[in-house]
Length: 153
Image (cartoon, rainbow, N blue to C red; front, top):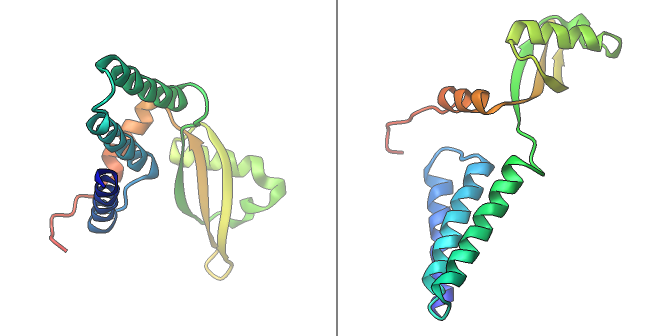
């Protein structure tokens, strides 16, 4: 019965976080889930020895760190841009498009580009650029990217 209570508590916590706050990135939500999961494991591990609990906690943390920093995850971010040089969106001008975007945005390692809606009347298109970020760029984008909302919805 206690496990059902913890499961319902987790649903409540994530429901509150999901619907009462601004959008939380998937990565941050995953870390939050891991922290809550480790807490629940520690709370329910009344028959396990302290060494087993420490081992389990360390394994979860090390696997998470390994996936984050070393093996699987590429640190890629994206930016949506309204672009006015519509002649560069042709496939034969791909190299010039990337060079122009790198010069204008200051992003040196654009990995791919997605061209969205094109408006030929206004000579603009919506482009999403994808680029790999370093730890320095990640901290800068987190500082700039989050908007603070002081009102109570």
